[in-house]
Image (cartoon, rainbow, N blue to C red; front, side):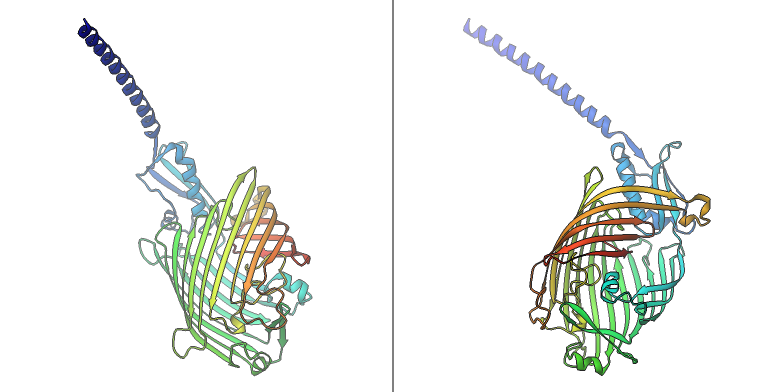
Length: 481
Protein backbone atom coordinates (compact mmCIF):
# COMPACT_ATOMS: atom_id res chain seq x y z
CA UNK A 1 0.00 0.00 0.00
CA UNK A 2 2.77 2.42 0.93
CA UNK A 3 4.58 1.54 -2.27
CA UNK A 4 1.43 2.29 -4.28
CA UNK A 5 1.01 5.72 -2.65
CA UNK A 6 4.66 6.67 -3.25
CA UNK A 7 4.45 5.50 -6.85
CA UNK A 8 1.33 7.64 -7.52
CA UNK A 9 2.92 10.66 -5.79
CA UNK A 10 5.97 10.37 -8.03
CA UNK A 11 3.74 10.12 -11.12
CA UNK A 12 1.77 13.20 -10.00
CA UNK A 13 4.90 15.27 -9.32
CA UNK A 14 6.40 14.18 -12.62
CA UNK A 15 3.22 15.22 -14.42
CA UNK A 16 3.15 18.62 -12.70
CA UNK A 17 6.85 19.19 -13.36
CA UNK A 18 6.34 18.36 -17.06
CA UNK A 19 3.45 20.80 -17.26
CA UNK A 20 5.57 23.53 -15.62
CA UNK A 21 8.39 22.79 -18.05
CA UNK A 22 6.03 23.06 -20.99
CA UNK A 23 4.65 26.38 -19.69
CA UNK A 24 8.18 27.77 -19.15
CA UNK A 25 9.30 26.62 -22.57
CA UNK A 26 6.24 28.19 -24.24
CA UNK A 27 6.76 31.41 -22.27
CA UNK A 28 10.42 31.47 -23.24
CA UNK A 29 9.59 30.87 -26.89
CA UNK A 30 6.98 33.60 -26.80
CA UNK A 31 9.44 36.06 -25.31
CA UNK A 32 12.12 35.03 -27.78
CA UNK A 33 9.69 35.36 -30.67
CA UNK A 34 8.61 38.76 -29.41
CA UNK A 35 12.22 39.86 -29.09
CA UNK A 36 13.08 38.46 -32.47
CA UNK A 37 10.05 40.15 -34.00
CA UNK A 38 11.26 43.43 -32.55
CA UNK A 39 14.83 42.93 -33.69
CA UNK A 40 13.81 41.52 -37.06
CA UNK A 41 12.41 44.94 -38.10
CA UNK A 42 15.27 46.48 -40.01
CA UNK A 43 15.70 49.30 -42.46
CA UNK A 44 17.82 47.94 -45.30
CA UNK A 45 19.70 50.65 -47.19
CA UNK A 46 19.18 50.03 -50.90
CA UNK A 47 20.24 53.48 -52.16
CA UNK A 48 21.76 56.76 -50.93
CA UNK A 49 20.69 59.84 -52.89
CA UNK A 50 22.67 63.10 -52.62
CA UNK A 51 21.23 66.50 -53.48
CA UNK A 52 22.84 69.93 -53.27
CA UNK A 53 26.53 68.95 -53.44
CA UNK A 54 27.31 70.69 -56.70
CA UNK A 55 31.05 70.70 -56.05
CA UNK A 56 31.69 68.23 -53.23
CA UNK A 57 32.42 64.66 -54.32
CA UNK A 58 30.10 61.97 -52.97
CA UNK A 59 33.12 60.09 -51.60
CA UNK A 60 33.98 63.00 -49.27
CA UNK A 61 30.45 62.76 -47.81
CA UNK A 62 30.26 58.97 -47.55
CA UNK A 63 33.64 59.05 -45.76
CA UNK A 64 31.77 60.49 -42.78
CA UNK A 65 28.86 58.01 -42.86
CA UNK A 66 28.84 54.83 -40.79
CA UNK A 67 26.55 52.88 -43.12
CA UNK A 68 26.50 52.11 -46.83
CA UNK A 69 24.30 50.42 -49.44
CA UNK A 70 23.37 46.91 -48.34
CA UNK A 71 23.59 47.64 -44.59
CA UNK A 72 20.62 46.94 -42.31
CA UNK A 73 19.78 49.30 -39.46
CA UNK A 74 17.38 48.32 -36.63
CA UNK A 75 14.29 50.52 -36.94
CA UNK A 76 14.47 51.62 -33.31
CA UNK A 77 17.97 53.01 -34.01
CA UNK A 78 17.24 54.61 -37.38
CA UNK A 79 16.39 58.17 -36.28
CA UNK A 80 19.41 58.39 -33.98
CA UNK A 81 21.77 56.94 -36.60
CA UNK A 82 20.59 59.39 -39.24
CA UNK A 83 21.10 62.32 -36.85
CA UNK A 84 24.59 61.14 -35.90
CA UNK A 85 25.55 60.91 -39.57
CA UNK A 86 24.01 64.31 -40.24
CA UNK A 87 26.24 65.85 -37.55
CA UNK A 88 29.36 64.14 -38.88
CA UNK A 89 28.75 65.46 -42.39
CA UNK A 90 28.06 68.95 -41.01
CA UNK A 91 31.32 68.85 -39.06
CA UNK A 92 33.32 68.72 -42.31
CA UNK A 93 32.69 72.46 -42.50
CA UNK A 94 31.65 72.17 -46.15
CA UNK A 95 27.94 72.84 -45.79
CA UNK A 96 25.64 75.53 -44.46
CA UNK A 97 22.96 72.95 -43.74
CA UNK A 98 22.71 69.14 -43.80
CA UNK A 99 19.65 66.90 -43.58
CA UNK A 100 19.88 63.09 -43.61
CA UNK A 101 16.49 61.41 -43.76
CA UNK A 102 14.60 58.33 -44.87
CA UNK A 103 12.80 58.71 -48.20
CA UNK A 104 9.10 58.32 -47.36
CA UNK A 105 8.20 57.49 -50.97
CA UNK A 106 10.88 54.91 -51.75
CA UNK A 107 11.59 52.05 -49.39
CA UNK A 108 15.25 51.64 -48.40
CA UNK A 109 16.37 55.01 -49.79
CA UNK A 110 18.31 57.49 -47.64
CA UNK A 111 18.28 61.14 -48.73
CA UNK A 112 21.25 63.41 -47.99
CA UNK A 113 20.12 67.00 -48.59
CA UNK A 114 22.86 69.63 -48.61
CA UNK A 115 23.45 73.34 -49.05
CA UNK A 116 27.11 74.04 -49.80
CA UNK A 117 29.00 76.92 -48.30
CA UNK A 118 30.67 79.72 -50.19
CA UNK A 119 34.15 78.37 -50.81
CA UNK A 120 36.01 81.33 -52.35
CA UNK A 121 37.01 84.21 -50.07
CA UNK A 122 39.07 86.94 -51.78
CA UNK A 123 38.31 89.35 -48.94
CA UNK A 124 40.02 92.50 -47.69
CA UNK A 125 41.63 91.85 -44.31
CA UNK A 126 41.03 94.07 -41.29
CA UNK A 127 42.21 92.51 -38.06
CA UNK A 128 43.31 93.69 -34.62
CA UNK A 129 46.99 93.09 -33.89
CA UNK A 130 46.60 92.64 -30.14
CA UNK A 131 46.05 89.27 -28.45
CA UNK A 132 42.33 89.97 -27.96
CA UNK A 133 39.66 92.57 -28.63
CA UNK A 134 39.59 93.40 -24.89
CA UNK A 135 43.34 94.08 -24.80
CA UNK A 136 42.90 96.51 -27.70
CA UNK A 137 39.77 98.13 -26.25
CA UNK A 138 40.86 98.57 -22.64
CA UNK A 139 44.69 98.57 -22.60
CA UNK A 140 45.55 100.07 -25.98
CA UNK A 141 42.83 102.74 -25.97
CA UNK A 142 41.23 101.49 -29.20
CA UNK A 143 44.19 102.75 -31.26
CA UNK A 144 43.39 102.22 -34.95
CA UNK A 145 47.09 102.11 -35.73
CA UNK A 146 47.16 98.73 -34.00
CA UNK A 147 45.34 96.94 -36.80
CA UNK A 148 46.39 94.69 -39.65
CA UNK A 149 45.05 95.11 -43.15
CA UNK A 150 45.64 93.44 -46.46
CA UNK A 151 44.22 90.67 -48.63
CA UNK A 152 43.17 87.23 -47.51
CA UNK A 153 42.45 84.71 -50.24
CA UNK A 154 41.13 81.26 -49.40
CA UNK A 155 39.87 78.62 -51.78
CA UNK A 156 38.18 75.89 -49.80
CA UNK A 157 36.95 72.54 -51.08
CA UNK A 158 39.25 72.59 -54.09
CA UNK A 159 38.39 69.92 -56.69
CA UNK A 160 35.44 68.99 -54.45
CA UNK A 161 37.78 67.02 -52.17
CA UNK A 162 37.80 69.31 -49.12
CA UNK A 163 41.27 70.62 -50.00
CA UNK A 164 42.13 74.14 -48.90
CA UNK A 165 44.48 76.70 -50.45
CA UNK A 166 45.27 79.93 -48.61
CA UNK A 167 47.35 83.05 -49.31
CA UNK A 168 47.71 85.95 -46.87
CA UNK A 169 49.23 89.32 -47.78
CA UNK A 170 49.13 91.56 -44.73
CA UNK A 171 50.40 95.01 -43.83
CA UNK A 172 49.81 97.42 -40.94
CA UNK A 173 50.93 96.61 -37.42
CA UNK A 174 52.42 93.29 -38.57
CA UNK A 175 53.79 92.71 -42.05
CA UNK A 176 52.94 89.11 -42.84
CA UNK A 177 53.01 86.78 -45.82
CA UNK A 178 51.71 83.21 -45.60
CA UNK A 179 50.91 80.35 -47.93
CA UNK A 180 49.33 77.00 -47.04
CA UNK A 181 47.81 74.03 -48.83
CA UNK A 182 45.87 71.25 -47.10
CA UNK A 183 45.01 67.89 -48.67
CA UNK A 184 42.90 65.92 -46.18
CA UNK A 185 43.05 62.64 -48.12
CA UNK A 186 45.81 61.38 -50.41
CA UNK A 187 44.75 57.72 -50.71
CA UNK A 188 41.66 55.80 -51.81
CA UNK A 189 40.71 54.69 -48.31
CA UNK A 190 40.80 58.35 -47.21
CA UNK A 191 42.81 57.86 -44.03
CA UNK A 192 46.06 59.69 -44.89
CA UNK A 193 46.46 63.43 -45.50
CA UNK A 194 49.14 66.07 -45.95
CA UNK A 195 49.44 69.82 -45.51
CA UNK A 196 52.28 72.28 -45.97
CA UNK A 197 52.84 75.92 -45.19
CA UNK A 198 55.40 78.68 -45.22
CA UNK A 199 55.28 82.17 -43.73
CA UNK A 200 57.19 85.34 -42.89
CA UNK A 201 56.31 88.22 -40.53
CA UNK A 202 57.99 91.35 -39.20
CA UNK A 203 57.12 94.03 -36.64
CA UNK A 204 58.25 97.53 -35.75
CA UNK A 205 56.40 97.35 -32.43
CA UNK A 206 56.46 94.35 -30.09
CA UNK A 207 56.06 93.53 -26.40
CA UNK A 208 59.43 92.65 -24.89
CA UNK A 209 58.52 91.85 -21.26
CA UNK A 210 55.63 91.56 -18.81
CA UNK A 211 55.19 93.77 -15.76
CA UNK A 212 52.33 93.35 -13.29
CA UNK A 213 51.08 90.65 -15.65
CA UNK A 214 50.68 93.16 -18.48
CA UNK A 215 52.57 93.30 -21.77
CA UNK A 216 55.08 96.14 -22.13
CA UNK A 217 55.55 97.39 -25.73
CA UNK A 218 58.28 99.25 -27.56
CA UNK A 219 57.99 100.95 -30.93
CA UNK A 220 60.66 101.88 -33.47
CA UNK A 221 61.07 103.15 -37.01
CA UNK A 222 63.11 100.04 -37.73
CA UNK A 223 62.11 96.39 -37.74
CA UNK A 224 62.38 94.97 -34.22
CA UNK A 225 61.48 91.34 -34.89
CA UNK A 226 61.23 88.93 -37.82
CA UNK A 227 59.78 85.42 -37.93
CA UNK A 228 60.03 82.75 -40.61
CA UNK A 229 58.64 79.21 -40.65
CA UNK A 230 58.17 76.29 -43.00
CA UNK A 231 56.17 73.20 -42.01
CA UNK A 232 54.97 69.84 -43.28
CA UNK A 233 52.12 67.98 -41.57
CA UNK A 234 51.06 64.34 -41.95
CA UNK A 235 47.56 63.35 -40.83
CA UNK A 236 46.27 59.84 -40.12
CA UNK A 237 42.52 59.46 -39.54
CA UNK A 238 41.71 55.75 -39.17
CA UNK A 239 38.16 56.24 -37.86
CA UNK A 240 35.39 58.81 -37.72
CA UNK A 241 36.33 60.20 -34.33
CA UNK A 242 40.11 59.71 -33.94
CA UNK A 243 42.96 61.41 -35.79
CA UNK A 244 46.75 61.60 -35.44
CA UNK A 245 48.97 64.42 -36.68
CA UNK A 246 52.74 64.56 -37.04
CA UNK A 247 54.29 67.92 -37.92
CA UNK A 248 57.86 68.83 -38.81
CA UNK A 249 58.74 72.54 -38.72
CA UNK A 250 61.71 74.85 -39.24
CA UNK A 251 61.71 78.27 -37.54
CA UNK A 252 64.06 81.22 -37.73
CA UNK A 253 63.39 84.32 -35.59
CA UNK A 254 65.40 87.49 -35.06
CA UNK A 255 65.18 90.56 -32.80
CA UNK A 256 67.00 93.87 -32.83
CA UNK A 257 69.82 94.68 -30.42
CA UNK A 258 67.46 97.14 -28.74
CA UNK A 259 65.27 94.30 -27.48
CA UNK A 260 68.21 92.31 -26.13
CA UNK A 261 69.42 95.32 -24.15
CA UNK A 262 65.98 95.77 -22.60
CA UNK A 263 65.46 92.06 -21.92
CA UNK A 264 68.51 89.74 -22.27
CA UNK A 265 66.19 86.76 -21.68
CA UNK A 266 63.98 87.52 -24.67
CA UNK A 267 65.77 84.70 -26.58
CA UNK A 268 68.00 83.85 -23.56
CA UNK A 269 71.69 84.67 -23.19
CA UNK A 270 71.31 87.97 -25.07
CA UNK A 271 70.81 86.11 -28.35
CA UNK A 272 69.42 88.08 -31.28
CA UNK A 273 68.56 84.97 -33.32
CA UNK A 274 66.56 81.85 -32.63
CA UNK A 275 66.89 79.01 -35.12
CA UNK A 276 65.48 75.53 -34.46
CA UNK A 277 63.67 72.48 -35.80
CA UNK A 278 60.50 71.10 -34.20
CA UNK A 279 58.66 67.82 -34.28
CA UNK A 280 55.11 67.73 -32.91
CA UNK A 281 52.63 64.89 -32.45
CA UNK A 282 49.01 65.33 -31.46
CA UNK A 283 46.05 63.02 -31.06
CA UNK A 284 42.38 64.01 -31.18
CA UNK A 285 39.34 62.02 -30.10
CA UNK A 286 36.36 64.10 -31.13
CA UNK A 287 32.90 62.82 -30.15
CA UNK A 288 31.07 66.16 -30.12
CA UNK A 289 27.69 66.41 -31.81
CA UNK A 290 28.60 69.67 -33.57
CA UNK A 291 32.20 70.85 -33.45
CA UNK A 292 31.52 74.57 -33.78
CA UNK A 293 29.38 74.79 -30.65
CA UNK A 294 28.92 71.39 -29.03
CA UNK A 295 25.99 70.52 -26.79
CA UNK A 296 26.61 66.78 -26.33
CA UNK A 297 29.64 64.48 -26.38
CA UNK A 298 33.29 64.99 -25.53
CA UNK A 299 36.61 66.06 -27.03
CA UNK A 300 40.04 64.88 -25.92
CA UNK A 301 43.39 66.10 -27.23
CA UNK A 302 46.95 65.11 -26.37
CA UNK A 303 50.05 66.81 -27.74
CA UNK A 304 53.78 66.38 -27.27
CA UNK A 305 56.27 68.69 -28.92
CA UNK A 306 60.07 68.67 -28.99
CA UNK A 307 61.64 71.97 -30.00
CA UNK A 308 65.33 71.70 -30.79
CA UNK A 309 66.31 68.55 -32.66
CA UNK A 310 69.84 69.29 -33.84
CA UNK A 311 72.95 70.08 -31.78
CA UNK A 312 73.18 73.65 -33.16
CA UNK A 313 69.51 74.52 -32.54
CA UNK A 314 69.18 77.63 -30.38
CA UNK A 315 66.15 76.47 -28.43
CA UNK A 316 65.60 73.36 -26.33
CA UNK A 317 62.07 72.79 -25.11
CA UNK A 318 59.80 69.82 -24.39
CA UNK A 319 56.08 70.52 -24.15
CA UNK A 320 53.18 68.18 -23.32
CA UNK A 321 49.52 69.15 -23.28
CA UNK A 322 46.35 67.28 -22.32
CA UNK A 323 42.88 68.74 -22.86
CA UNK A 324 39.46 67.23 -22.20
CA UNK A 325 36.07 68.86 -22.74
CA UNK A 326 32.74 67.27 -21.85
CA UNK A 327 29.26 68.38 -22.93
CA UNK A 328 25.98 67.31 -21.30
CA UNK A 329 22.41 67.98 -22.48
CA UNK A 330 20.38 68.28 -19.26
CA UNK A 331 16.96 68.75 -20.86
CA UNK A 332 14.66 71.76 -21.15
CA UNK A 333 17.29 73.59 -23.24
CA UNK A 334 19.84 73.39 -20.42
CA UNK A 335 23.42 72.32 -21.17
CA UNK A 336 26.51 71.91 -19.03
CA UNK A 337 30.10 72.14 -20.30
CA UNK A 338 33.29 71.28 -18.45
CA UNK A 339 36.83 71.77 -19.78
CA UNK A 340 40.15 70.76 -18.23
CA UNK A 341 43.60 71.52 -19.61
CA UNK A 342 47.11 70.74 -18.32
CA UNK A 343 50.37 71.86 -19.93
CA UNK A 344 53.92 71.10 -18.83
CA UNK A 345 57.10 72.63 -20.28
CA UNK A 346 60.69 71.69 -19.57
CA UNK A 347 63.26 72.96 -18.67
CA UNK A 348 62.28 75.56 -16.09
CA UNK A 349 64.28 78.36 -17.67
CA UNK A 350 62.94 79.36 -21.06
CA UNK A 351 63.13 82.39 -23.36
CA UNK A 352 60.56 85.07 -22.61
CA UNK A 353 59.35 84.88 -26.23
CA UNK A 354 58.30 81.26 -25.75
CA UNK A 355 56.60 81.71 -22.36
CA UNK A 356 52.94 81.96 -23.27
CA UNK A 357 50.63 80.35 -20.74
CA UNK A 358 47.41 82.00 -19.55
CA UNK A 359 46.02 85.01 -21.39
CA UNK A 360 46.80 83.86 -24.93
CA UNK A 361 44.23 82.55 -27.38
CA UNK A 362 41.52 80.64 -25.52
CA UNK A 363 43.80 79.75 -22.61
CA UNK A 364 42.56 82.30 -20.11
CA UNK A 365 40.68 82.33 -16.84
CA UNK A 366 37.51 84.36 -17.13
CA UNK A 367 37.85 87.46 -14.99
CA UNK A 368 41.57 87.75 -15.89
CA UNK A 369 40.99 88.67 -19.53
CA UNK A 370 43.28 91.71 -19.38
CA UNK A 371 46.26 89.86 -17.88
CA UNK A 372 48.98 87.62 -19.24
CA UNK A 373 50.56 85.02 -16.99
CA UNK A 374 53.87 83.81 -18.41
CA UNK A 375 54.59 80.42 -16.90
CA UNK A 376 56.37 77.18 -17.73
CA UNK A 377 53.37 75.05 -16.75
CA UNK A 378 49.70 75.69 -16.14
CA UNK A 379 46.32 74.07 -15.71
CA UNK A 380 42.71 75.12 -15.47
CA UNK A 381 39.14 73.89 -15.05
CA UNK A 382 36.25 75.74 -16.70
CA UNK A 383 32.58 75.06 -15.89
CA UNK A 384 29.68 76.60 -17.82
CA UNK A 385 25.92 76.17 -17.53
CA UNK A 386 24.07 77.23 -20.70
CA UNK A 387 20.39 77.99 -21.28
CA UNK A 388 19.27 78.18 -24.88
CA UNK A 389 16.75 80.99 -25.30
CA UNK A 390 16.63 81.30 -29.11
CA UNK A 391 17.06 78.66 -31.80
CA UNK A 392 15.78 79.58 -35.27
CA UNK A 393 16.65 80.10 -38.93
CA UNK A 394 16.16 83.46 -40.63
CA UNK A 395 15.29 82.92 -44.28
CA UNK A 396 16.13 85.90 -46.50
CA UNK A 397 14.61 84.25 -49.58
CA UNK A 398 14.86 86.48 -52.66
CA UNK A 399 16.40 89.37 -50.74
CA UNK A 400 19.73 87.51 -50.83
CA UNK A 401 20.73 86.38 -54.35
CA UNK A 402 23.44 84.00 -53.09
CA UNK A 403 21.94 80.71 -51.92
CA UNK A 404 24.87 80.11 -49.52
CA UNK A 405 23.89 83.19 -47.47
CA UNK A 406 20.11 82.95 -47.79
CA UNK A 407 19.44 81.01 -44.60
CA UNK A 408 20.97 82.40 -41.38
CA UNK A 409 20.86 80.12 -38.32
CA UNK A 410 20.70 81.99 -35.03
CA UNK A 411 21.02 80.43 -31.59
CA UNK A 412 21.33 82.45 -28.39
CA UNK A 413 22.55 81.03 -25.07
CA UNK A 414 22.63 82.63 -21.62
CA UNK A 415 25.63 81.35 -19.60
CA UNK A 416 26.80 81.31 -16.01
CA UNK A 417 30.31 80.06 -15.30
CA UNK A 418 33.06 79.45 -12.79
CA UNK A 419 36.79 78.95 -13.59
CA UNK A 420 39.83 77.77 -11.62
CA UNK A 421 43.42 78.04 -12.84
CA UNK A 422 47.02 77.77 -11.71
CA UNK A 423 50.21 78.87 -13.46
CA UNK A 424 53.62 77.71 -12.20
CA UNK A 425 57.02 79.28 -12.75
CA UNK A 426 60.06 78.46 -10.68
CA UNK A 427 61.93 81.68 -11.47
CA UNK A 428 59.37 84.44 -10.90
CA UNK A 429 60.35 87.79 -12.45
CA UNK A 430 59.99 90.85 -10.26
CA UNK A 431 56.64 92.57 -10.64
CA UNK A 432 54.71 89.46 -11.69
CA UNK A 433 54.37 87.72 -8.33
CA UNK A 434 50.65 88.30 -7.77
CA UNK A 435 49.26 85.74 -10.22
CA UNK A 436 52.09 83.25 -10.61
CA UNK A 437 52.11 80.17 -8.32
CA UNK A 438 48.71 81.20 -7.03
CA UNK A 439 45.20 79.77 -7.36
CA UNK A 440 43.13 81.91 -9.72
CA UNK A 441 39.33 81.98 -9.45
CA UNK A 442 36.87 83.71 -11.76
CA UNK A 443 33.12 83.65 -12.30
CA UNK A 444 30.38 85.52 -14.08
CA UNK A 445 27.57 85.44 -16.65
CA UNK A 446 27.37 86.02 -20.36
CA UNK A 447 25.64 85.50 -23.67
CA UNK A 448 26.69 83.57 -26.80
CA UNK A 449 25.22 84.22 -30.24
CA UNK A 450 25.95 81.33 -32.60
CA UNK A 451 25.46 81.85 -36.32
CA UNK A 452 26.65 80.46 -39.65
CA UNK A 453 30.18 80.02 -40.97
CA UNK A 454 31.37 78.99 -37.49
CA UNK A 455 30.98 82.42 -35.92
CA UNK A 456 30.30 82.80 -32.20
CA UNK A 457 29.79 86.29 -30.76
CA UNK A 458 30.46 86.13 -27.03
CA UNK A 459 29.79 88.75 -24.35
CA UNK A 460 30.79 88.10 -20.71
CA UNK A 461 30.67 89.97 -17.45
CA UNK A 462 33.35 88.46 -15.20
CA UNK A 463 34.71 88.93 -11.68
CA UNK A 464 38.04 87.60 -10.37
CA UNK A 465 39.27 86.73 -6.87
CA UNK A 466 40.66 90.24 -6.38
CA UNK A 467 37.22 91.79 -6.87
CA UNK A 468 38.10 93.19 -10.28
CA UNK A 469 35.27 93.02 -12.79
CA UNK A 470 34.56 93.95 -16.38
CA UNK A 471 32.51 93.41 -19.52
CA UNK A 472 34.43 91.47 -22.16
CA UNK A 473 33.70 90.77 -25.81
CA UNK A 474 34.93 88.04 -28.19
CA UNK A 475 34.32 87.02 -31.77
CA UNK A 476 35.31 83.37 -32.13
CA UNK A 477 35.59 81.43 -35.38
CA UNK A 478 37.30 78.25 -34.19
CA UNK A 479 36.32 77.06 -30.75
CA UNK A 480 36.36 73.82 -28.83
CA UNK A 481 34.83 75.08 -25.56
